[in-house]
Length: 223
Image 1 (cartoon, rainbow, N blue to C red):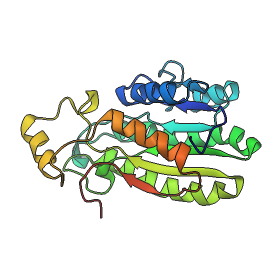
Image 2: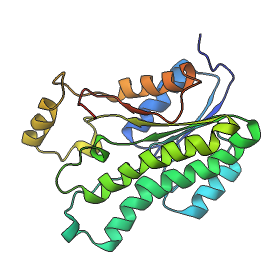
Image 3: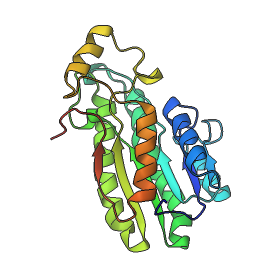
Image 4: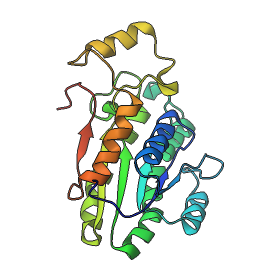
């Protein structure tokens, strides 16, 4: 029996991504009575403040999983202002303001949960991932600040680092680099999206007293 049993509404941003779809399937399997919203970018563009405000004015939210984001590898000297701003909008500001608008319902209900999806690159960035790594690193401060800011309203805020996943986002990684990353794992194997979805489900339903934490889900040493 899960600790959180009351039917809830879950909003997963970046809803057409493969991890978002695995999350949707997981929730539909284990929580068939819950409402699971997985909006596409056309329905909810996290880089657009009006889109965020309008979406959450029409939809309640008890659990926000901020899965939207994008990646572009480039050295700082070759990074344009537009590319820098775009990556920070999608990976950082979009997550922060999705949480801001989702929290309005949570505050009224005296409870809720925000889960940001971060990256191992925030702690150990590879060469040439300056904008993405910077945005994901900022999610650490965002998570811990909001956990303190909203704790009194019974809103949990946590950060999950899914690990290296073999999906569309990592499809362009060369076989050589992929093997280097695999060897950096203590278990010499990658995580998968099904395991990430199962962990996030457990974090929400089984750990109601946990907030302000960082969870690294693969076997690379974080600190």
